[in-house]
Image 1 (cartoon, rainbow, N blue to C red):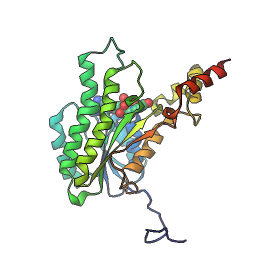
Image 2: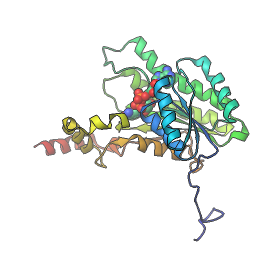
Image 3: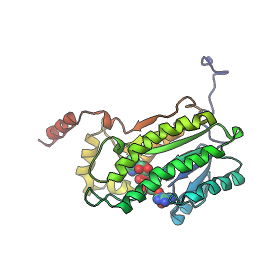
Length: 282
Ligand SMILES: NC(=O)c1ccc[n+]([C@@H]2O[C@H](COP(=O)([O-])OP(=O)(O)OC[C@H]3O[C@@H](n4cnc5c(N)ncnc54)[C@H](O)[C@@H]3O)[C@@H](O)[C@H]2O)c1
């Protein structure tokens, strides 16, 4: 095989390996975070399940280990900033390093405009925004030269730019998170830590697949599929694939970027989308 220009040889058996990496995924006891954690483990990483839900997180770690991966649950409450530095110190003492931090957790509810409360606002923003800043700050602070390459990934949403009236806190939080990604990229870069984000579209988590694909949900599902150029909605695996790439050594010059993972949904003209729907229903 001819070598690829710029490469020392033409063989790439280790295109995406996390064998020597320690990866922390917040909110990975369930949902998208669980699959992200599982995929990092499948590519060789030692994975840390950083969540406050002990039961689900222990089960997540158990399943990853059962599949041949390396995962351990270390409880973390993202609402408690004082925990962050000791938490990272504990991980480094136990595993020798930290390599990747995925800020994935979310909290709070969909309140609607008039239902929004200061309590919910704080809950949402504490976990998705404030914790993403201060955990990243603690992470960047403790990464030494010997631990590089290191990177951070923030999990955002198309809700950062496309709004409904479901949750003011969620929309505001995700919009701010994407700018925080750029800020952290500038702060982390000089220390060798890249920071990127993924802006997710319609993702059906594994736990919701059964309901989403049930007969009773057919009309809603068809509408969701119709509004996606690829004719399908996203899965947690789609998110994990983007995460694996962005945090890897195949993306060393990508920094401060929020990559859209929505199958092209948000690229479309809403009027054309509406016409597609009207045409289908007539
Ligand atoms: N599901 C989607 O369609 C979708 C779409 C766009 C973006 N996202 C984003 O993807 C990410 C994951 O979403 P999900 O639907 O899998 O979430 P989820 O609600 O299923 O899981 C969130 C996890 O965060 C944990 N958590 C909550 N508060 C915590 C705290 N204080 N400390 C530690 N852990 C805490 C929970 O225990 C849970 O395990 C979120 O950032 C979300 O905004 C999801």
